[in-house]
Length: 604
Ligand code: AGP
Image 1 (cartoon, rainbow, N blue to C red):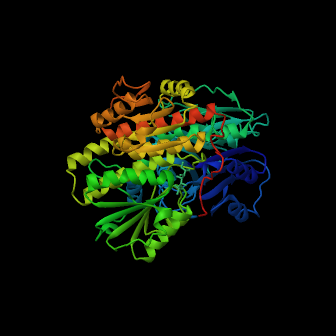
Image 2: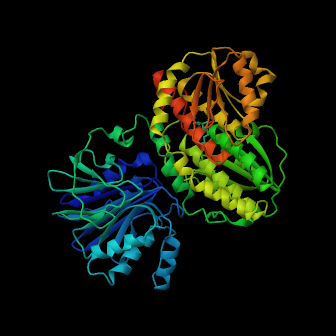
Image 3: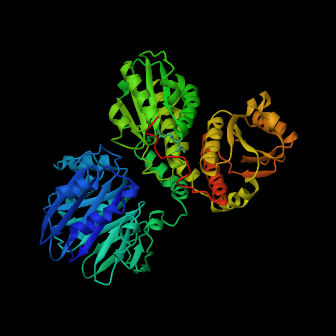
């Protein structure tokens, strides 16, 4: 999730921009930049890494008097984190910063290249500024050129653009990614991708809505809607609490990250789904040449994502898969062959056990692939290839959106391989791609369901333990649900294959033993149902989660009917995330920073 700031006013603009970007650091980034326009002259500074690097580059730059400026912190999605790929991106006399993904950037880029435009970066963003200058050749004004540019963009964007001819103006647009416009009593106008960047600098703001675009100058703000109608400017007071601003109104980062899974999954999917195939710009099919087995290696939640992938890859890509818990793999003297692709999954890209396992595999001569959320992390730098999950920074220690995007990427990888290996009919690949397109809707939190889980959570505070049970991919989901609960409520929970309960664990069944049963309609429903009935007959307290009514449980969470078990998977994932969070809230625990845990376990 990138950070955007903008400023119009008479103060020294460099520090205002950098201070604003610093307030957005919590969103995560791997490069940053600012562009300042004063007296029709531009100054541009960009740096890879943290803001201190940018400050170093701009240390001898200062302004006095009126200027406009834009700034950006970039979380790499298209193109590696390099200075060239850092924003602002420049045309001949315009600069742009952008948050989101331009879906049709390739076709626009192809058209502009044919018009003789030279691109410097690998990003989708650069298309915006060149398209603007292309339109400027025929448009009556820079603002008309900006409007025509927006008409051609598809995808999600929050944009700030400045042009030397419009010396006192910032052009802005919002569609799918957040953008906030603020003002203060000193006549200054500011922009931010989160109000955290505006707190203390503005006393009132406008939270732009999708389709809103316009321009701001020292004297005025003009904003239009998607039908090009002038919009009344309704400013609202800005809260003073930075931390609450970073949580964007949610109680916890974990809650915010559960709610943003819909938008985040849209980013994960963006540019990767074709009608009948999957496209990873990061992958070269040569990586899979000579590969007869995939070994998936990870820790914790990432291991659960790996486990889901093991079912999908063997089922659809017809390739042998083995699973490794990294901390075990490191010391068991594994037998490795070079026809095995070693795939590590890690949100942080820094987990010590997983990183060391990756090094072992490389030392043994295996080809390696990392599924990771942090570009430029140790694992990304070390592996032969990487696929970014694009979840944005995950601040909650208990992983949620990272898990969702990992499973999404692994499902896409399954279909990519099924296409390469011709193990699925094109019609089936096409069908599953259509399912993937519905994921953002599937994980959108239903407020009524959240309220039901909040109320229900009070009944599950004092048992002697939890079993989360499921079959097939719902077994790793059960493991993940149990881990979420353990992590933040400190209550004991186990994930179990529901078919295993009768091989011992059912001895624990009594009213104080809570069973959370995952009963998907489209995957082994009857088998799982009979397992749950065995527990119910022994008076275990059962909460069933299913799109089908189930009368043998004490509580029932009814999920929506959908056409495939993988859609049921994602919806039940959200239920388990919220259920654990609401129990932890009732117990008064620190949801975002649970005791004894760290976000990234970089030590053994
Ligand atoms: C998950 O909620 C935990 N925070 C933890 O299990 C985590 O998944 C594990 O430490 C692996 O981290 P990674 O994905 O960054 O490698």
